[in-house]
Image 1 (tube, one colour):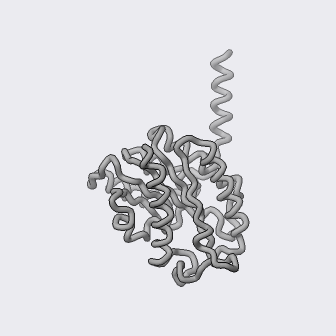
Image 2: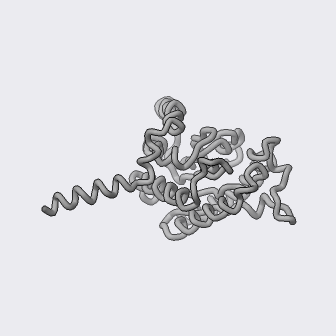
Image 3: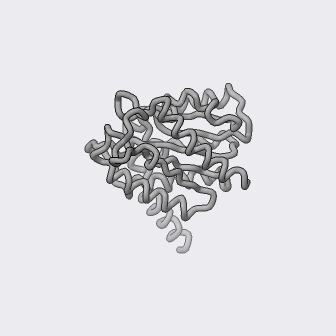
Length: 230
């Protein structure tokens, strides 16, 4: 009887997983080739065990100066354009499991974009929690850093929702050991509270060289603060 109850509870928990509804979606399955390319890199490249693992969406992929900017920290770079937390919740095991690393840094900014497919801040937070749980299954004490979603002109009308999602993820980070929220909005807004144009490309979304320089300063300072104690 106890085994039967346990089985029912397991099925119920699985059915309530925030990931289940995304696993078979075409827009999630479409990224499988990108993940396979990461897996090929994992086989062909050798990374030091003390590397900082940067993962996420196009702002990570387009960071061409990442290795130079993060020196002397060695890095692993795993970004793909258009990534969402709903993708990462499905693919996190394949992305992170193969690697030993000193820390993990994540930036994913496409779950709230002012489209009908937008997730609620609560959904975003639940997916982040799920990704973190997956990471912790193989990296139980590795420091994990979440870079706050940046305020951008292209998504300004949903900035309040993005702020709410940022706040919810910050709360999760504060409640978890070895998990850190990197706040960035203050550095990308002018004295009128609007995004600083020179930090973004013509699409008003992705960072320019100056924008990456701002990111570098903030992120590296936080890495130094946490890792020097480890």
